[in-house]
Length: 416
Image (cartoon, rainbow, N blue to C red; front, top):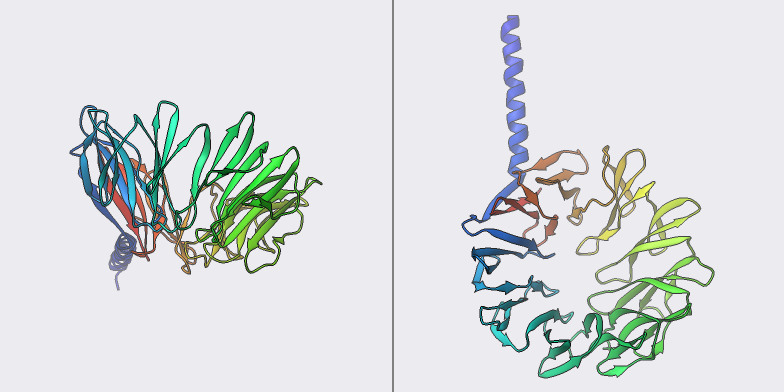
């Protein structure tokens, strides 16, 4: 075969390879126009399940809420929507031109008294919606047919699993009390609320000086520690965890479950933080440091975490604990198995992970990127001016983010 024909054949084969290669990449990522930009886009966001929302400005000083494509009337003021834990319900406040406040949900529009909207809370089982509003400095908490006045409320309001009980931190002089359904605890220098146990009892840590314990209602259920630095409870109120600093100055983790007669206490470390909890099982993940070594723990199992370590995360079903780590090169650790990334990543990079897959997704300043952990290929769709964080939508079995080009809003997706 003449040499010019050989060269032409090679170039043709190379061209076909690149066409096939990049068309395959494009086929894995698809982008959908959500808003055409006819109304200026003010803000947008996603929840952790499958919803998206946006606020537009149809007229000067008027704002419209759009949730999953459903448009509201225009209002003078809107709060960001709050989604229920199961992702099936949502609510937000709106204020009209007459200064009337409304509580708007997926099912109704309800006028609310008062001059200023407060906060919206769903019970862990997603069945009960509670909210607050203000009249000057007095806050009213509405739970079912009960209206409760709060003065000097501190932090969040907590609901029991079925929404029948509430708890909130209040101030008494320079001290703090845990108000549990109207009954107050002893006064503490510091209170760290945790949440309601499945039996309807409120859990929290209370500190007096350098003596800190975890309480269930008004009874201590832990040893005495110098301080409690982090706490978590799962959505079902069946597993609770904490990071505690002992009187010696070293740190331990505590794991509470009805499966255990007493809390499971880890060995001591020089430092611990970034506590995460399995969605349902008595499993925890956290960062720990000892003898100059960074590790990520899953209960008593240690995973080498590199010189720089990102926060650990569980996938939505709890099947995998994963985190970023970096030595000379960076890696992703999934249940103790390291996948080299061969590039420098910031340890704070937000990553979405499909359970039991060899893929992850992350966002750059302009696009959603899917990475195959085995062949290290990158897949991406369109580019945008601004990008949200990534999530894995298990209902649609795909990675998603929101992208904005001027006032146009896109849902950007990738799946493999």
